[in-house]
Image (cartoon, rainbow, N blue to C red; front, side, top):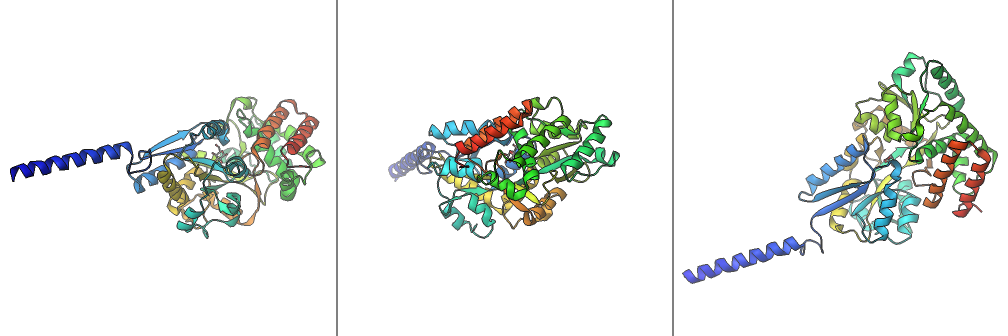
Length: 426
Ligand code: GAL
């Protein structure tokens, strides 16, 4: 009896040790993988980092015991992150999931080239068919299958202003560039810098130009830029460049040293009255305790009322994701109502889903949601949707050169060439 008891204890102990070893080696959980989740993004600034953390908190509650690796590479619009991602993906070392804009940035760069898994089964199991606007599903799809999960809709064409500075000077938000110049002159006369810009990473100046193109060409003409229908050498683009040159006489002298968020901070510090940026700036203001309609005012970028430049952040599943199960669970959180209602009010964006509770959103985001429904929706080029990455990179360079030399003819020739080189124009 005694002998048998000892024998039983020995066997149980051996089995337990073996089980622990199996678990520790990861076998039985998932091939070669401990419980980790690596999420790659460029969300490091106020607002965007808070939104990401809110989704991590939900993930941790739903899937306890998973170590989350927050792999961020600073630099707005992914200036630095996209290069790091490319090296990792091409070197066979992908993160479990990464931030990517819907449209060309996802499809041309990663899907057509065979790096991503189809998410058709996930969309089905999560019942997402009816909850996303079809337009959004279309831009994350290739050959009928979705390849990423949109978490939000940002608006690219927004003018932000310091409400108190505007009130003190009895100014109202300029609806056109002509109105902008009048307001800017009045502010300048009082010694207030009219427009904050921080274009250290190039894309910020290109972002402003994108909004000027939309104002000058209208939604249809603007769309034509990405399909070859609107000529880069025509009068419309010339007029947009001339307007841009004039606007630049109202921006802060040290713009080349700043970033999008330092430009937003200039409004808070009363160092400038206005800035033009996507509504991640609203997320930044929120993170600094600044409130819509009290501390800051907002309006469509001059001349772009009635149009909505769509920027959508999405997450996908690389084929070689080291922790595939954890990555799929991440996508479930990112696509859920709970995830999007926690993320977007902090991020300064509206849900990609259509069923979020608007009461959770502030006055600015409520107005954005209303505009998204009724405005002409146009894609952003600077934020990855409208054109292939090759064009986007050259576009940033051309615009930045223009900011320095104001040579409209040279810019037009270079833009037309880039359009041809990237097979967007004949
Ligand atoms: C955009 C992105 C936004 C925001 C912004 C600044 O490209 O879509 O989510 O992060 O860059 O970093």
